[in-house]
Image (tube, rainbow, N blue to C red):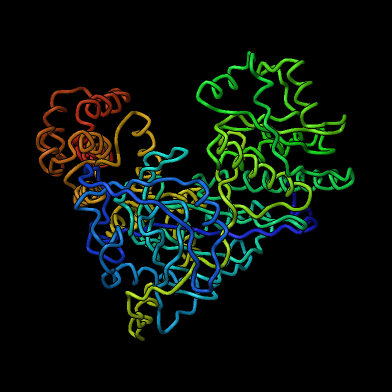
Amino acid sequence: MHDEAYYKSLGFMCGLEIHQRLATAEKLFCSCSAILDELPPRHDVIRHQRAVAGELGEIDRSAKFEELKDRSFMYKLNDVHACLVDIDEEPPHTINRDALEIALQLAASMEMKVPAELEPMRKEVVDGSNPSAFQRSTLVGLNGRISVNGNGIDVPSMFLEEESAGIIKNAESYAEYDTSRIGIPLIEIDTFPYIRTPKEAKSVALHIGTLLRLTGLVQRGIGSIRQDVNVSIKGGSRIEIKGLQELADMDKYIENEVVRQQKLLEIAKLLKSRNAEVSESQIDLTEIFASTESKLILSSLKSGGSVFGFKLKNFNGAIGMEVNPGRRLGSEISDYAKMAGVKGIIHSDEDMGKYSINESELAEIRKRLSLSDGDSFIMVAAKADIAEKALRLAMERAKMAMEIIPPETRAVDNRELYTTRFMRPLPGGSRMYPETDIKPIYVSDEMLVSAQERRISVEEERSKLKSEFGSEDMAERMMLSTELPLYREITKNASIDKQFVANILLQKFRELQRDGVDVESIGNERIKQIFEMFSEGAVAKQAVEQLLRLAAKEPKAAITEIIKANALGRITGKKLEEMVSKELKGKDLSDRNALPLFIKSFMSEHRLNVDGSELNGIIARLSKSSKK
């Protein structure tokens, strides 16, 4: 990993967009349930998209690109989680006040200015993930600042907006979405692009994620938080990497994006030095493969397809140059061509043997395309109209390779190699326009005062945990844990053993999950009840783990009933003393090993019902009285 000076020398710029679902009962602009479950869909809605001009009369370039795909979208709905608002057949209702209060609390926690009047906007959605082709987004906070490892990080904006639909199927010409999560309140927090290293980017994302969790009012689980990263270097372009789920790997994706841009700049320099050119002519090569043994090409021809190709002058070797592990310039060009519906391209820097294209076919291709020794070619096998569109996109990307790194939105391609792939051109500035169906939202002084009273400090929380545990390591582990809000709820009882609670949540939960115990099924309220019963002396410390195991097996059973049915109630006080006296009666305790053996035997039989420290105290007292 390189240091800050290295990235500064590259003109490295990096900013984050953190998206986090809020844990409210209802959606942002309707009364549908925001608590997800697995209710089956009852209705289908099918729609298509086409690009239209925004308020400024311009069509967004990413919308244009998506229209080229000519895809259809099916939306699955059920009556609990979706309504006419979600499919844009009914005006939105008033904003969810619970969600707004959480947003204001976060704004206060990041020292943001809150506009006196909030203006909901429509933000164009180009990937089909919303039936209306837009999401409602409201700017709540401006010009904030956080401190991460002693460095100030500017946070220029925070939005309260609607979640999109969840993808079910994603094919070349068709996508299917689950609308259950559409409209769930979502916070988007943006940083300025002044993050100095990939490592710092990860630290900033971790800090913001921790701040969000500290509210105790955000959803948990896969997909509930997403991190988008914007990266560029000098001479390159802004690249948005979408939806990094694994925070631990964020720096590796950023490092690889820096390398990718460096390699693409090197390729552009090489091609310029060669006076490279991309031909505008698409040549029909179908006849060459009349008796081909290439299964890939034969499959296309049998389904009515053709083979078309074009020439790249002085590109020899460049298309095969690696830009990231397992990815070459050819991969970048292929990603563009795939948007037309083809599975990929064939290019001359590849081994033609893997396609079973023989030497005579290759010689004929070179002849038809008028290739010289330093030239390359790209060809596609598909139906004529699709092949034409695919090659046009491939030509566009090949031309870019000589001049610029195109600004793009990219998605994770390989999670083991930390590489990304092209999704669509980076959206422009024509995506936002006013939401005329909602009145402005006025923020009162009382709302701002309430938000300030509830403000959160990550630094103060970290310091507090260190003092509670006496361990910096455990404090850091708890800060990173999704169980922190639950820990705070349980330890509101000042008398409870905080370290014991932390060990259960941080260590024991992981062990139970490795044993196949579904800890999530217990539910926070029942977990809190288990600890309440422990703090009240109703169950022994040793019984807590067993009680958690049983509660996971019986998710609908009352904790009191589980304790009763499994005889897990604590034996304490006079009753315990009577049991010990009875079992000690007549025993010879003159041997110094007699008492330890007795304690071991007694705890082996009653360990889930008896507290060890209380047992030791009773035995010490009985032993002392027997000697008098």
